[in-house]
Length: 479
Image 1: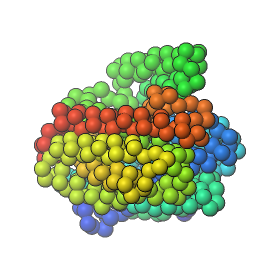
Image 2: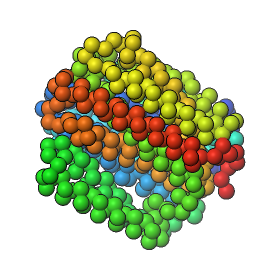
Image 3: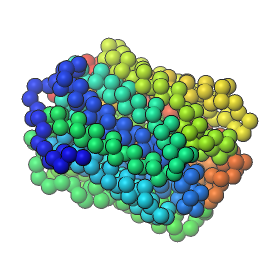
């Protein structure tokens, strides 16, 4: 990494950049590379769960925390990360997040126990909380209003390239070398991201002053952490103190968070941002959709390896069609939403994806890839292709431009919290615990029930979008 990569001031924002120009290409490249790094990591870690469980002797709850430890830190601090970017410079905070994420990835790769790995994943989530909101906020602040929806679509499509490479690279590393190497691959990606970011203009919100809402971040983390611990611990019996004590503390912290945000002079989560009905509706839709995605990803990766006997590489390749469709069609979906409005794509997309999840729910020990896994993956990918770019553009377009970092942070926090709660709660809901992830018969029964729940959540996301989002959401920039 160049010595000055994290300290160079970079270009200063002036006129908004146009899509297709050299400045626009640098903005897209840097944000795509960072998003690809996070996406690749998530894909590889999910595929590596069985190998991690075997190597470190982890229980199902240990595997859940391997996923949720990262997501907990990310969801808890992502709003603070967006606020830091708005005040100190989105590019600057973005660069810090990239470096932090890469270093924490190295720590994950050398972990010698489940506890060490979980702790390292929490540190990795802190880095993710700094870089993730910056990606979309930089796009929103850098591009001309008329180019933003298409730029977000291109960002979604190009970031999806990591999804094309991730299953093969991550699965190959798990099968041929070790699960530890799935974390090391983040380092070269971070170096490339830092090189591209040197050409990205800086942007910030000049009105953001005063103290940071540290109490809000603390209460938010305690709320999510307490509820997550309660849900995961409930798998071994819901009436134990290990369940109801953290659960009650989590609920109390959630109430304290709401009170803090209403009273704070500079709240981490400004209540006023939810005054826009479309912003609120799009985030409620995000909660349902990404809860379904989090549960689906966790359960399908284990089902393919535990029940169908796939290796990590084959399990990753099995869902490749949906990622191809998302990569190819996201930019077109963004352009379509700009032309006809986002309401219809955001309503139809989740319903189509829900149909794909129902198809995938039949995947079992005797299933064929060609008649069960592939068709379900294709239908799911078509639905998500319709949804992702319009949803993201609507969330950002509904908020004032000077709150781009906050808007991006809120939506990312909602998405991560949804996945966190799904991974923590679904195994309990469908009756899985202990070493059930290694028992094909026990896990397969829970898998089917979980996929039905995920399909219901996905469909609910479409209904919410239809009821709350207007077709003129992207007609003009927010003032």
